[in-house]
Length: 144
Image (cartoon, rainbow, N blue to C red; front, top):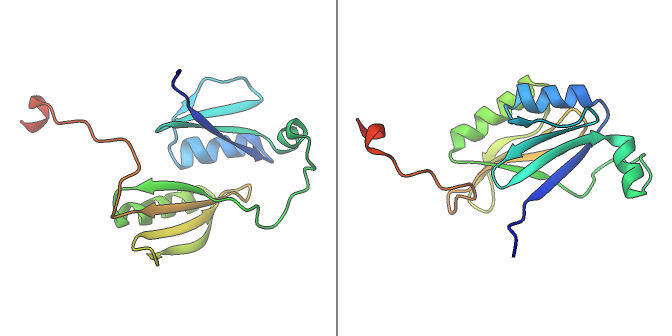
């Protein structure tokens, strides 16, 4: 079986603004891509940005969606301090803080922001399990 990679594609109103937000504001690593779309590599997945109307047309659905869209994206970090830092970074880049970082009912620590196109992101620290890639083992030169 071939390895698979998931990709999340967000419809955006202003592609250049969204690229600046994710690339410069949040520091996501951008891949080379055609002018009508932008791709970013993330750990285990890709993020794609595509024009809102064009994505709706591709999916054959109306482009006038509003309100809660029934989905939130999550960005997981290793510490509570990183949750605070990512939320601050997102707001500085143009996001709107929706829910300040706080202890949550399941025992973790999280907060939410809305990106410039209204996509809801949770920034979370899960003290019970790390969902990101494993840290590489230190080499001898790292320990000197």
